[in-house]
Image 1 (spheres, rainbow, N blue to C red):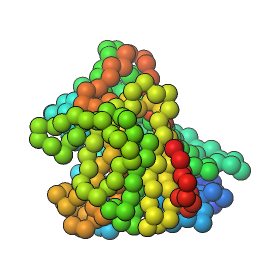
Image 2: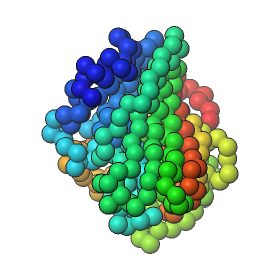
Image 3: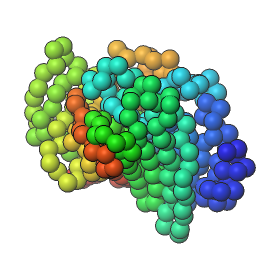
Amino acid sequence: MNIEALNSRYGAPGRIVFHNGFAGYPNVVLANKYGSAEVALLGANVLSYRPTGHSQVLFRPAKRDDEYNRGNGFHGGIPVCFPQFGNRLDPKLPQHGFVRKLIFEPVGSEYSEEMTELTLAVRSDEETRKLWPHDFLLEIKITLSMKLNLTMTVKNTSSEPFVFSGGFHPYFLLRDRDLVTVRGLDNHAYIDGTTEPMTEGVQRGDIELTRGYDHIFDSGNALKNEYAIIDPGLKRAIAVVSTGNARAIVWNPDNAYVVEDHTPENFHRFVCVEPVSDWPGGRTLESGATYELVAAIQSTMRVENCEV
């Protein structure tokens, strides 16, 4: 659909507005009294989230949007990873899967006094089956309310089971990484991805981000997982509450990671706290079955006595 048709069918003046945007494909802005969020249809990537009265919550690289194409990854906002997170489930698949480079289509929108919501979807087709020989329907629901709520729903539309992993990869904007702590993972077992070979351990206390970090934490069998990013430089805390994830990854690449859309100093400005279905393996989804991963993000400007 063109922009006019998208706004006619799924838009609402002042609440859900499509426009030409990221990488030459449509973006959509969601807005209400609680704030605003911008989403790219390319990859269903949430590019920005700004609660009313707050500064930007998500890190977004400085490279201009019109310099991208569908072959590029976008290392900012909240990328969607599927049908694998990382590259250990299936080394033949791209890192973090391939849907972040696909065009999602709107399939529903809704708004009320308390929320603004858009659902985007992508289905398997001839091109995806060349990369991964399974049929699927992936829906991403973005709901803007007092929080930013993200729901990933995977449905196996093939006649056989398949194994997958998936997750959200949010980049949270910081004033200075070295001053930031991450809470909510005390006593959780982890795998340290910065060592070779990888080592295992158990987290004690809060995570202090004074160095490069790549820890994959076991969420156990918790029905709900709660994390917090405490940023005294911006005088705020960001809470991340998730369900459906067996793993949580805390990542900052330090200066060892340079991609074309980042400057060498960008690592000081973000941390990723990522709810992930599984890692390094995947989970089996039977024919006709669905899986759901939910993440809620909330920013508060009060960091005193913040508890998780």
